Image (cartoon, rainbow, N blue to C red; front, side):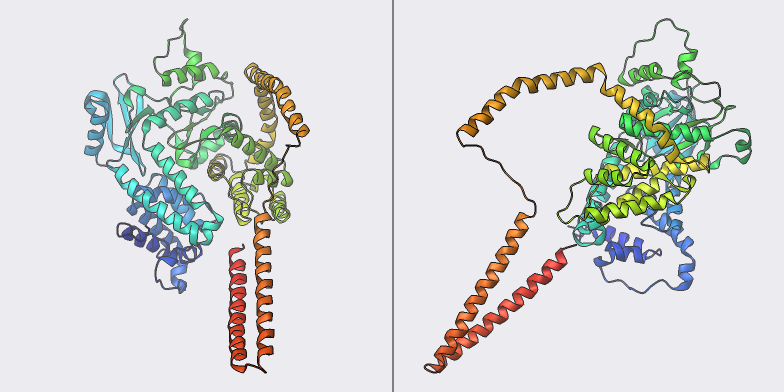
Length: 598
């Protein structure tokens, strides 16, 4: 239970978190103030003027509360519709601004996981971390063969802490879903389940290693994008070693570099890579925030792309892959595109702990939605959103379509440079929740990814227009899907399914005609509003019957008054009590019906 003693400290902490740092209005709207008695007065003017300082305090408090709260803050940093801009800016720095892990703990974890002392494994190991995250810490190192690598080590005892925090988050989500406005608007339980699954995946670095290898294979055809290779022999469940990227963060590009190099092709290629992952592969890097994307200059030594490995390979016979990750590298080199001559600067993606997979049907719907957004087709946008979820019985399709059209029209009034794909998708999700549509959790993750991608592409090229790339890439998507639909494997499967249908069709027709001849054919018709109509008719019938009984009792009592006055008076008292009961019941029932309807 949410109010059990083990949860009370966390409950007090989260209520204090949203009420002591300038977010009292947010806490009230989301139902967090219902947990206890809190002062409802607004922030004084001097405190409101210091909202930037409050945002810093809010971020620091999240760090103090632990890794799960840091992840919660990272999720909130992608929701500008929920928090003020100053808080969004501060929460973005949670990506790499938490406390360090002591070097002794790092050495102990490496020795336990890899089975040897750190001094035997590495020629050099930097004691100062390159970066610190909520779940782990990254150090620079050099292997015995001279390769520069980065080593990510998991925080000690982080699993036990996260388990207790996630259990508390589940209780809070259940409360919000049952008692607050945000629970009616957002699938908070689904969000917490998604967060729980993401944390479970991030805690197993073997999954991250495979995700990195899959992403390197998927992006092999984009020569301007580097995905570092995983050093499999130096990786385990709690230690991950990859090739080292030497570059600058995408939001820290030196001004002089913008004079020497054109970064628009990088923004274009990164967007096309994500469109391919979302619409064709159904697999993409789900956390492209500026801390995970580096700009690699041509004068720096960096890992080779699969295309560069192929270009520099002089062997006549390819080496046979000994492990699944090695096989993925072989496939990446086979899929690599030739290196164009105009490649100067490159982008490098790191940290593969958060990747996303879209099922086939979800991928098709996401493709239709993105293509409709790119072409400003508001009817198709509304239809696709409705198709993605279960429609409530009282859903107003016409009003929903009008509001989607108004949203699209507002974006049409802006120049293409000022339209951010991620923000538009978040707005569509908010409108959908407003009308009672519960979209799949994958849509929230997709919107979060595109929102972060917008920030990266704008940092590369401030005038980059993502929807122009979406429109231009639409033809490539259509051709790729047509090629997939006409592949020999798909045609064979279609032929097999058609053969089964043709084989079974005569027997099924014979069954139908036999039932018709025997007058034994029936059909089930499901009318969603029928149960509610039956309940309403039952209420009307009950009220009519009660009225008839009351009228009969009044008539009988009036007729008894001249002959047997006491009995007549008793009848009038019973009739009055019955009338009062009927009126109170009707009023209570009508009020309850109005409150339950949205």
